[in-house]
Length: 383
Image 1 (tube, rainbow, N blue to C red):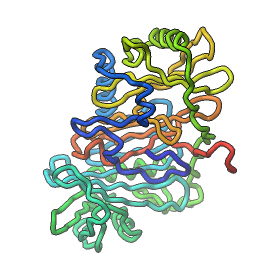
Image 2 (image 1 turned 60 degrees about the horizontal axis):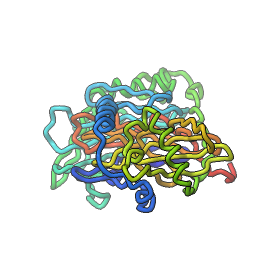
Image 3 (image 1 turned 90 degrees about the horizontal axis):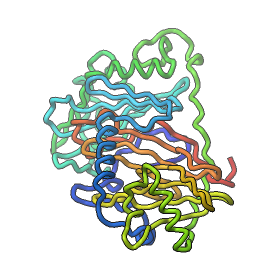
């Protein structure tokens, strides 16, 4: 999951970041996993985790605490992030038994911003061909529109043709190739494009997708600035005395997230990963669930007793690039968050959803659609 500056495009969901059927996620580096060393399965935590995943994935929502917007109508979804960049996603008609296909239309906020379009297909086995899959004949509303990649960006001319056709309910997009035919429905597209015009303040302007008018383009509001995150490295591991680890684990078990956490309940003693955040606080984690994937909980605690643990996240599935990543993936859907250390607190850096993805036949959803983005800058680097 990319966390970075000026994020514009959504990314296709890639299976390497999720759990394959019957498989297990690699959550941390092998040395980190050895330090955690948790094994087994805890029934209470598993039930809570699965219930949480079901709610998140079925609803297509990411975490609260952001001001993103989600909207769905028929075969189209819309997700706009906190900068007002909007991403509209179209699929096959819900009753179309043909091979899955999805179209992503992205438009940044502000005057004179054009749409960008990306296609993604899956074959009958749910595997996404690479860019080398070639091109196919593209038709929009029954009119030939030239060649288009089976997975990739449409040209500016093709995007303009598509956006002009969709509001008139004549924008059905079809890719024809020797290996198959893929059709993106236009049902719901007009309502979604109108919603983009509304959210981005384009109604009545020449650049509006649906309700065009003569209001000057310069009156369209500028994009909101993404919050800046000054990213610091996560702390290196510390070795604690056994007595300190036991006392700290007891404090963590007294919290709701730690009461049935596997790594805190091992007969041989708790398995903790501890790092020094600052002069007063430590970052502590333990593997809490490991039946099908590695799920970790993170807390900040005082360096000395009383430890007063404060939960950072109880659903971290990967630690990479100094980022705590929480991916909730189930069947056709996924959502997730990324958190980073800014030198003062562990802060939210990105939130995404796959949209209203149930029944769309893409493993864990076709796209990661941000509802919250930040401008991540390395601490000490020039602005």
